[in-house]
Structures are given as structure tokens and as C-alpha cells.
Length: 441
Image 1 (cartoon, rainbow, N blue to C red):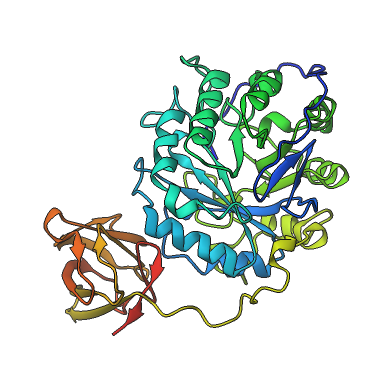
Image 2: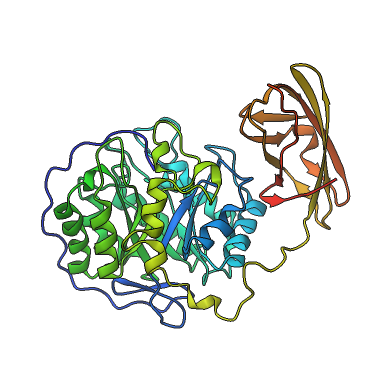
């Protein structure tokens, strides 16, 4: 997802005419012509939404809520360090939540967003470094996990290496390291490919994948504001015999009004996957892209109503992946928590202190931690001890100090903060340690 206008689409032209290469034998989800298929050969068409997990790690209930709305896929925003990093334990928990809720898990590294134009953005090579660090977590999950190497990996400025070279190198590095997953690659130009760089180089990039197991992802916002532009882009990949998904789209945007009706209708007619942006938590003037208000599945927005319940929407068109047939349903009891948090408040007229004890109840040591929680409205942190707290209100993440990063099995750390309030000093409803929801007390 990007938060700035793009240049207007100049022209859509005819595209690649090279015949498709037969699908290479692969493990789990894989490419077959223009389709994505499961290990058993059944076609799988993504119908899902993005969840901004990197910024809202405590909102783990979103996975079950997204499933209940009918989705078969969730695209999960992760960070390798541009924002608070999602480490191995967190990502393992995300995969577990996807599987528990019978969702195909598209994991994407958001650090690359707008590289070359956006300050702080990271390269695709750095994104690969992040995935390599997660290899042990992701190995064996090929039936359930798609690796979206880097979100919108280039802005509109020219950079070296360019999209085709950098994307090819990223794919080859992951394959050389033993990743057998279906890989997803985003277009440049903030994902919208208005210069057609991805469209015109897709065959070269696809053929460079030794497993022939790469799917291309275009993000359709204001550049795709007419039916002609939407269909012409989809037609290009059809003619090329290459797999494409609409990896992000919305019903409105600062750069124009996307034609979501054509996007959804054409995707359904062609068997093309689509993933809407996004479940909840948008800011920066694009709050209209929230599908539910405040992560509350009962509070559908107009965009949420459209994508879930409208014509060619998720409820009408999604089909669950067959890999989940016969597996435990999502409403079974969750596994025992591996952490416990106690929270004590000492309040006065306009302020309070909160003392927090984090206990590791697992049999494995914790090496580096972040504790996520949501402060009730009106509470604002003014200072803290034994952890860094960001931001100061709302969805807060407390990150370990250098001296208390390790928590031995059965061990505890004590942290705390001082805050102001406007009358409500109640505690957060839930605490998540490295992506795992903790017990209380």
C-alpha cells in the first residue's frame, strides 16, 4: 500500500506474446500456466484481504474474523526492521494462526515499499536477507505459505539495479537457499506498473526462476480507474500465459478512483486472485480503505461491505483451499499460552503508573522480545522504564532494553510506565509477546 499520488497512466498496449513454459514440479502451492494450484492439482484462486500485522501485532483476532467473513487468503504485513521487526517466533505464530483459521498465508515484507523514492525504504536484496533469517520457520509450510518477497519494491524514480534485475536476483537467492515456496513479486511504480516494467519483463523474470514457481502481483489503485485499463492489463498476462494476482486494490484512493467493480468481475471471470487493502488500521488520510472500524468485525465500512458482500465479492466467490479438508476447525480451543503478563495500576486524578511483569511460561528461552497491547482511549504514556514504548497511545509496543532481552524458561522481567488519562484507567484487554497472546495474572 502506498500513500501518495502516482503519475497518470499514459497508455495501455499489447503485451507479451511468448508461449508459457510448463509448470516445473514444485512442493505445495505452485504455478500451472496462468493458474495457482495446490499440491493435489486443484486450482486455488485467492480471495482475501491484507492485515497490517507489523503495526498491530496484538490484533491476532483478525485472522479468525477475516476467515469468518469468507476469505480463503490473508496477506500479512511484516517488517524486517524498517518498523519494529517481526522475528521468527512472531512469524511462526502468524503461520499457525493462518493454518488454524484455514487461510492461505501470503507473507509480505513491507520494508521495500517505495524504494528509490521513499526515505527509509529497503532494497529487495535486504528483503531476501530477512526471508533467509526465517528459513527454519517457513520450511515445510509450502502448502500454506506464499512468500511475497517485497511490497511495492520501487517507487517512480529510476534506480540501479532496476526491477527486473533485482527481482530476478531475489528469486535466485531464495531458490539457492532451498526455498521451495510459491513466490509472489510486486510491480514497481508503487505496485501499479504504469510504466509496464513488470508486464514487459515478466517472462524473463519467470524463466529465471529455477522452479518456475513465481506469480506476479499488480496493485490496482487510481491508475486503474477505467474498465479498459483493468482489462488490458489482465489481457496482457493472459496472452503471455503467465500467472497474475491483484495483490492490492481499493474502492477509492488519493490518486484516483479505482474501478473495483471491473477488477472484481474480471478477476472472477478469469480465475485471477485478488486481495483487498486492508482489514483495519489505516491512517495518513486513507482511513476509507479500512474494511472494518477499529478491528471490529461487526463494524463493516462501505468498502468492507462491498468487498465481502457485494457482487463478485469474497463471500460469493471464495473457495477454501482443499489442503484444509479434514483438518481441525478454527473454533477449537487455542493452544496453551507460552507467556503470562500481570498488570497493576496506581492511579491519581489525571495520571497513573502501570507495573508490568512478563513471565516466560514455555520451556524455551526468549532472546529479544516485544510486548504489544492497546491502551484504552484517553491514556497516553509520558515515560517508562526497562523498555522502549512506541507509540505513546493506542496500539503500543514495548521493546526490550539491552539488559533484559533474555527471559529464561520460568523467568520474568519487570517493566512499567507513567501515563496520563481522561478518566479511564482500565488495563489493556490483551497482551501479545512476540506475536503470541499471553495469559493474564
